[in-house]
Image (cartoon, rainbow, N blue to C red; front, side):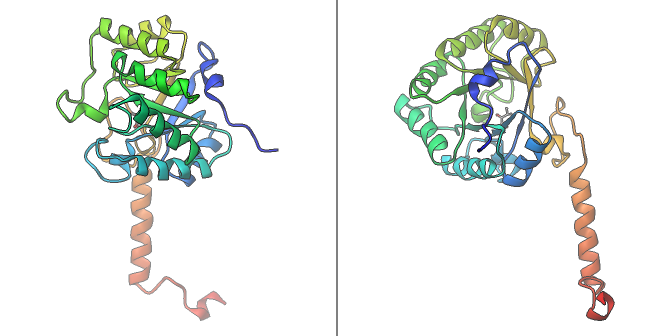
Length: 262
Ligand code: KIV
């Protein structure tokens, strides 16, 4: 019998229990490695735009991009909960767009839930998607999709606004909420206030779970954000391996000559 994936309901039920561990994943092999490592949730983040597709921000990422990479992450895993980001302009304009975009990520790519950015302003969209039967993870604090369009890479709102946004997304039906770059004390207060789990990124240790970008954790980016931690230097290992390969081809050492193989 096929193994069941962790559901959004099971994630929500982990509030106050063992910390939830989430990491971004964009392709089958790294998603597989993350699942084998026991990570609970894989986020096909629109950070894809920067760490995989080479854009300067997440803003240009399309629904097509998200579909392709979400399907790859699903193919590479069996039990992890896979959350797909709704990219910029796939949900902001109206409820119908939001439901259609979320539905496509679930139906065509196999996502188990979707994530969207915004607090009280995004609550109607969250309601509409949840009414259609699709679990939604909310995302408040720093909102990367629109940061570069004016507000900048900073937290949106003070303590009052963040608490109001958190309550609004919970009331709208979100099963969990990402707090990005929220002051640690405010994140702790939001975590105490809500019945749904908070998942922090750069928001201190009091959240119900943590999320980081895979490429930051593996040491694949030149300048990771200060709150991230690299647990390996895969970028360096890759450069050394590739230089060794290039060196051996140029020196005539690879592939080995037939006589040397025998
Ligand atoms: O796209 C992403 O990687 C994210 C995380 C920063 C939470 O939304």
